[in-house]
Image (cartoon, rainbow, N blue to C red):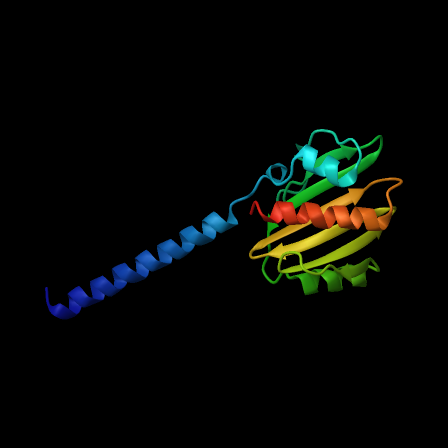
Length: 166
């Protein structure tokens, strides 16, 4: 075996090793997280000031989007949190633009994650959307009787807690 062949083999082995490590890192980052591990029932209850039921994954949700963890709030309110890996080209700006096209009100939320915004799909429901690295988190809530400012403040507090776990 001449020196040139040995050099090619070493370069090839290094390329394969680096590619394998890069794929392993992507696979680990891309693994699905259980949305129910991000917040506790007591954290949500403390933030909202209302009784909260146990959280459960929505197993009927689109598996390509992810499974939100859903909680009942009070007698007929709702809270959910979803964590997913961002899709190709999925950014806060693009999601905001798409929501605006659908005539859904959006407003920026400062100092949460890398990029965050609120959206208000209607019927007293609102969402806090946050991007951090390759993760996209969405808190959705509808708490009848609670003022918007209280819900937004609670969502921000809970999002910061959830971000610490990813």
